[in-house]
Length: 378
Image (cartoon, rainbow, N blue to C red; front, side, top):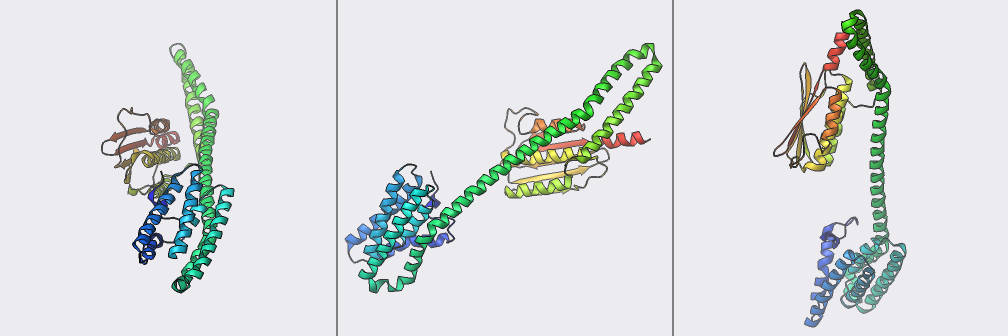
């Protein structure tokens, strides 16, 4: 079912109040008649026109052309008998909404021809009464000629914009998938071999401790050096990633919430100090995921983000006043919580959430990488 506003055309460049006037004007032309029978017939014809106009929008079959034909006949009758030509504008709008090119051109030619013919006829039959309306009738006929093409162009433009938006969304999804695969390959190539070596040397050191303590100590030194090398490579890889700073991500978050007509509240300082880039990138991704879930699922009217820093950790609290997480959802399933937890585990972070009259997410990341770096420099 279409909405009521299809009775009053939209996106025509004309105010809705003007269309309301067009809806009321026929009654004025009818009540000028002296005969009660003419007034009764006129009211019936007007109601029949709007009923047919409504049915032409909600019909999905060839009945559309039947309703349009009835509307054209009513428009011609109203023009010739009562001098009311403005129903032709409603028809012009609907004809412009027809997607089939052959149907559009056929109805356009018939409608334009009949409207011009009916207008010429009333000038010979109502020449004295229609002179004050001459400029408006001319504008109406001009609208009948131009409005269908304007509406058709705008509908095509809107359709193309929707296709472009859909294509951009698919491209964004593909870019995300490609980036994830690239990061997975880089992590595998960077850490896979070294973690395997650390595991083998750890097993070897455990076996050597009772029999050859000196050899076990050498293996432990090798493990420590391998771990440092792996950590250095991870940092170099992260520095080449297109990860966003937290303050940059907050700007995008604000834009997303504004587009969703949600109030955004920020508390705390988003400029993190002494926080490794890897941890900040993970925080940014988790924040983006949390806000995306709020926009998609929460039905909230506001979202609050708190950024709290201490010497040992960074806390990001994301709160909304939405419907909360449905009952039966386990701790880290659904709503992207599992993916957020996996990201946080990589940097020894934690995720907690509370869902009561809204949802509150507590994202914590310790400054462990920074501490390790300081220990390694000693």
